[in-house]
Length: 272
Image (cartoon, rainbow, N blue to C red):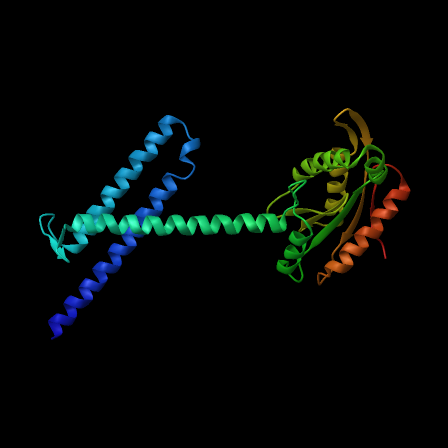
């Protein structure tokens, strides 16, 4: 009886390890073949060779775990299977499941991108900003820069929305150069209004960033047949203690209107 239990445990462990090996093999092969169509012929040949080697090594490892010879056969409902064929089928099934999982995750990422990204500029939108605030640490040091374009409404009204959209795309592209996955997040929250949130940024660094952004965005733009000079204004707010994003945005917005009064292409820091 005891020996029977030991055998059962051994079989269970061998089966479990075989499934794990099959999963790893399937995952590696899928990784090798990801975006393979866009690669050079030599690279495709290398990845194909790696995939074959991975499959062969996986089958060998599974076979060794089963401690069965390749000549042994298993009869199931009258059909004859070799252990090698069973292992291969296991890998194929797991590859299919991994492919389906990969598709589901890719679709989820696409939906997330549509929900959090602005379709015109490619920057994060208001939903993305709300998501950022939800995940923001309570006492994180932040600088909020609120920026909008001067004369945008008159350009939009006089030259048409398509010209306004071209301008927003150009400005969005320039702003994206200041984006950093961990340190800086840039949002278009509506119309010509943009918000830049910089983590671990003090007032001096925020002012330097504002100057760099103004230098990059205040310029002549060639928009179709129109050559337009467009300037921007930026308001800055710095967090002190507990992060209150409503207060930070309000203060930065207020400072931005102060910057507009100072002249073209200026910034202002909010002061109590």
